[in-house]
Length: 113
Length: 113
Image 1 (cartoon, chains in turn cyan, blue):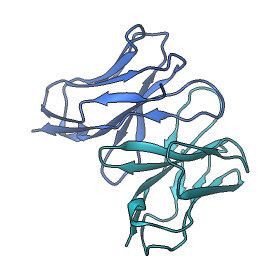
Image 2 (tube, one colour; image 1 turned 180 degrees about the vertical axis):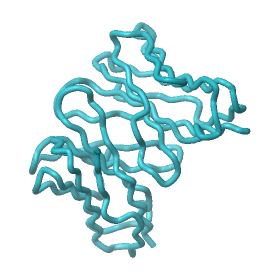
Image 3 (spheres, one colour; image 1 turned 60 degrees about the vertical axis):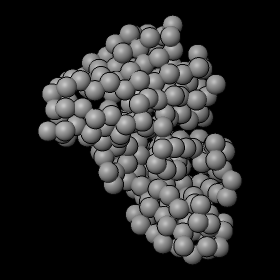
Image 4 (tube, rainbow over the protein chains, first blue to last red; image 1 turned 135 degrees about the vertical axis):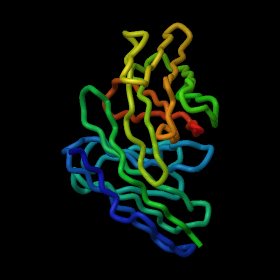
């Protein structure tokens, strides 16, 4: 069964802290994604990676960075957390070829105080 | 041109009624149009998807209608049930490697019993 695992479901961090959100997939997918979900704004793409050590900016990369050292793991990093980064973060993965089904993790709820 | 516009933002339907959610796009290079369903506290999951070579796809009570010339597609939920209450996202992508799904802003559906 397809599995995208986000290790932290709920986090509370202080302003200025460095935050790591980890994501692991077990489907040997080449593509991995980080989305941010906010009410009324839908799913907005932060960064994605189509191969190990490769990354591409999405629509809202400011204040975030990513790391993909291994194919199965894609990390989202908030270098200095701010209150406007309080949100739900969704990791996803997708293989190459068709269909283009993207599989999501359960989400990480981050509160920055 | 990368946007996918989704409407309505919220929808209330009586049990047994038909729920209809609409999406429109501009990028004619899009060739994959999925719908995702998300329950509270969960990540989105693929519900049904269509490619532009067909005008309609049906899976159980869920149907996608696709109008290529109008660049619109819609989700119809027949005989809506309270268990269908969720947030629905339309999305689109091209077949190019290294590209991400572009999501609409979501529709919150409530089916009243």
